[in-house]
Length: 462
Image 1: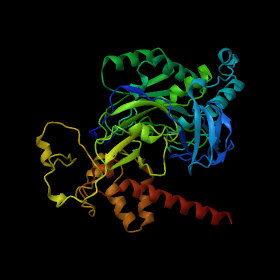
Image 2: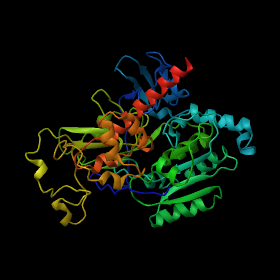
Image 3: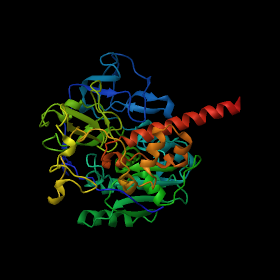
Image 4: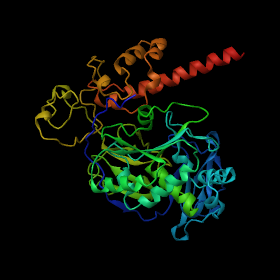
């Protein structure tokens, strides 16, 4: 499959290249849930003092991936529902260093060394950066990859960008790739990079050319070409239960280097804080549990706002119950919350809005970033069969047709039209002139199909 569809999403509030350091807060609020993980098994007691990197909780349903303490402090379990709170923080204490296994340098392909590395990646917090390239699900740390796919291309406007993460850290990135290569025999490591030509991009390419095991893949700057599923299909990498394709982002490779080179926990995060409601969008160096108010407070231009965990294309709303940054967050997008319905908004010429169909009056303006908010601009309407979602779909399916089958509760036809190929990039929902939430419809449909298949298997087994 070749890369197809896609669309350049040009929105206001894109974070700059600057990385701002936040001081340690008075307390941390560590959420016990993130998009993929539920840290339901608590390993500390109320009032217990923990050191930086100590295990707070783990996810028993996903290979015991741990939630680590970013700072030394005192645990409070009942202070806030759904969170573990750390107070009396001591950032100066630093994280403990796990003893380095010198045999890892002498015999990189020794099975015992590989097992030690896997254990380190899991226990010190780097394994949560790994995912199956085709499904996005967590990986078994004891498994063997069919290939490793690293993407430095992050084209959602409001998430941490690979070029920002790499700047000044090329040596660490290269070492991380070398560590990953020790898990492979003859399988390749693919590193996806933007096809832009800048001095920094050339520096990155030159650095990686010295590693024969790395296959560079040039990716056009068009959303969602940096998505692992799109890249895996483009490269002809097939799904496998026994030998899945391991997928990592830039942050994941840097976490691998931190854990396996220095023996210290991967507790630091660089997240993007942006969106149209932020006056100075930037990247922030922080930790899991950092109060969300500290990240966006003082930078909001208008109120009320809606905070989205992740980019605008695939992120989810941060509810009022979530007080701290979750374990998998790559950015916070802040939008102005629309409290009134625009009068006759559907017939307005759209001077400040952009449209894939080029029907708005703004098409006569020079290029500009759209300052979106939470308004629907026309509210919900039925599908008008314009076909725009088909044009942009990188999976090559027909979202408008699938939508109609779902609406008619025709599960068999939904399956036949390959809803399973959707990898939930959200482009169809974004460009839909009727503002139908196609992405969520397809997510729900795939869950329903999976549940029916599991029920049929249970019947057969009985």
